[in-house]
Every structure is written in C-alpha cells, then in structure tokens.
Length: 186
Image 1: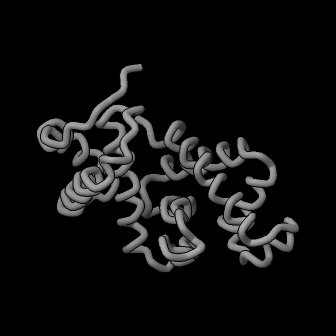
Image 2: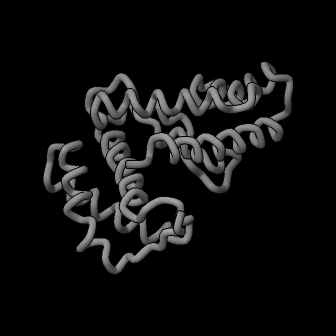
C-alpha cells in the first residue's frame, strides 16, 4: 500500500461536504455540525505530525470527527460523561495517555451517535480487549472500565503502581491500534 500524505490546503474543498453530512446526521443541527467540522480540521492540523500515512486522508479526518461528535455529546450530557470519564487526560500526572476514557461512547445513551454505532464501538472495544494478553486485559478492565483505584488493582494483581501504569499504557497502545483498524475506518 502506498503511504498516504496529508494536504491540508485541499481539505475544505475536498472533504467539508462529506464531513458536514456525516456530522449533521449524528447531531441533527447544521450549526453544530459546521462547528464540529471546523474543529475536526483544526485538530487535524494540530495533529498532522502524528499522521502515519497508513489510512487515507478522508478516513483519518473522519476518525477525528467521530471523536468530536462523541465529545459534543459528552459536553451536553455531562452527568453520564462524569460516570464514563473518571480520569481526565493530564500530561503532568500518572494518568498520562488516558485516551480510552475520553473516547468511549456510553453504549446505553440514546443521545450519543447512533445506537448502531455505539454497539459497533462496544463490540470493537471488547474484541480488542479480548486480543490483549490476559494480565493487560485484566488490568485495563479493572482500572479503566470498572473504575477501581490504583491501590485496588495493584492488590488484586499483586503488582506495584509503576508496573500497573506500564501494563495499562501498553494495553492502551494496542487497543488504540486495534480500534483504528477495526472501528475508526470507513
């Protein structure tokens, strides 16, 4: 496969209509959809250095837009979001890289995305977790999904906090790659 390159100068002309149509069907509000597309382009510019060229430019932008839609519903549905997002991303703490908590849609929420998309994401997450080594899957599930404290997880797995964070970091890396392959594609 040929390595893809980004060409931000053409994004608006090439992808704005497609991204807008995608967003408006999920948020049912043209102004919000326009804002989400604009945020997508901005986020794409900010993270262009992270683009690996393994996906098409449009596919990469859609994956960013999907996250923006999820974030939108989290903001307006903060009570459910607080239950889902127990840890916020903070580069200066032990929680560095807690991206999964911020991207996973609540599968029981009828407001977030569509019911079909939530089920697909849930299935993709569980399939990806099942592919992890047993200890990584258990550590990730206990800490991130079940919301146990670091102390509780360490006691359960008989490991120290540093070891836990290494295990969880490795699990997140594999999970994100798996999700990018199995869900964030078009």
